[in-house]
Structure formats: C-alpha cells, structure tokens
Image (cartoon, rainbow, N blue to C red; front, top):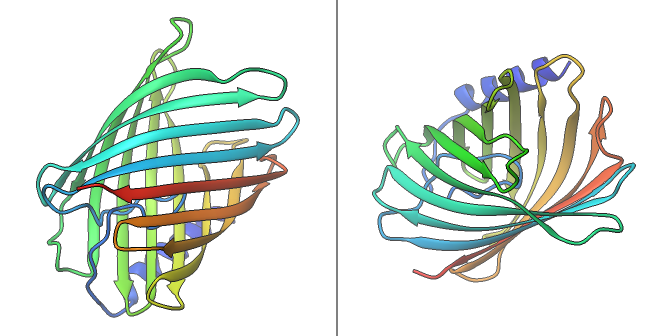
Amino acid sequence: MFNRILTTCVAAVLLLPGAVSAHHGLDFISVQTAHLPTRGAAYAIGRFDYISEEHNEMEFEPAVLYGATDWLTLELHAHYEKESGESWKYESLAPALHFRLTPREQAFSFGFSVEYEFASDSGDDDVLELTAMFGYEVSEWMVTANVLLEDPSGLSAEWGYAAGVRHSFSHNNAFGLELNGSFEGGGSSEVLIGYYGEFSERLSLNAGVGTGIDGGPDWTFRSALIWQFR
C-alpha cells in the first residue's frame, strides 16, 4: 500500500504545472528537498524529536548548513539520544554533501545527498546514507519525494522512502502531510502532520506530530528550529 502512495506522490510531482521559489532545503520535517541555500548563505539548525514507544526516547540533532555554491551545500550535524531513565548520550557525528542538479529557477527540482555517520562508540557501525530528492512547487503547493539507501558498515544495505505534500495558507504559514518508512520486509512506516512557519526572514520553525504504521512508534513529536546567520 505504501509503495502505491509513494508512486502517487511522485506522479503528482511530474504532472503539476510549474512555479518557482527558493528555499533552504528544510521545507519539511522528515523529507529532504533540493531547494538548497544560495552561495554564501549559512544556517544553524536545532532538531528535536520525542518518540513514544515501549522505551520512550528523545533525540537532539544540532546542525550547520553552508551554501558552498548554488548547486552544492555542505552540512555537519551531530546526534544525541536519551532513553527513559538514562542520561543524554552522544551517538555520532555526520558530515554531508547536498547537490542540486536542476536549474535554481526551475520549478521541478532534483538532487541527491551523501552522508557518512561516524559512530562515537567503537562497538557501533558507521553508516553511509545516500538520498535522491525529487520535488515540484506550484503556487501554494509543494510535493517532494525521497528514495534512501542506508549502508551500515559490515551489514546489508536497506532501502527506504520519504514523501510529503504541503500547502501554504499565508505567506508565512503552511501545513502538510509526510510519510516515511522502509521498503524492506518487516519495516515500519510513520505518518506525520506538520506545521511550517516563518517568523522572520531569518527564523523558521517546522513541527509535527505523527504515529507509526506496521509496528512503528505509538506517537512522535518532531521539530526543527532554523536560523539563517549569514
């Protein structure tokens, strides 16, 4: 069923009439877009997630984005995690490269990202992650889909997906629906309702609540605070 939903989202991307808008690539909560920062622009991001399941978990991910060119963005982020009854734990550090392969003024966007996650614990595996990003923007609507390949060191690679659609109700406020999960057998999925707000030209907030499907978490809260400092 979820494969059909993803196919529908991609088809919508290809069929909608075009429009043009520039973004920082953080237009959704769990879905990446190829609307990358312009050259010289820099952002600080604080991501915070709360996952409610058998063992409740909190995750914090500080990150920095820098537009090296109009088609290449550099990113560095860290992962921190806290389970119920335990202290915060530093999990990993991950540099990433994001590429946009279509012209910036074009409504259809396509790009890919490469991320390598260095585990802090020698007993954990480093992880290489590749993401293909497809998107289309028209008027107040934006549709985006990702295909992900995650390859932990020494383990078999896993395929996943993420897709989202959002609608702007005013110049600074939008709502959307996101879906992400795994193509692997027995993998779980998550559906998320999101709010995307721009408080000023430099400060934005993405926040949403979701629930798991096919064995996913009971419910989740996910957010990202985005500040452009250059």
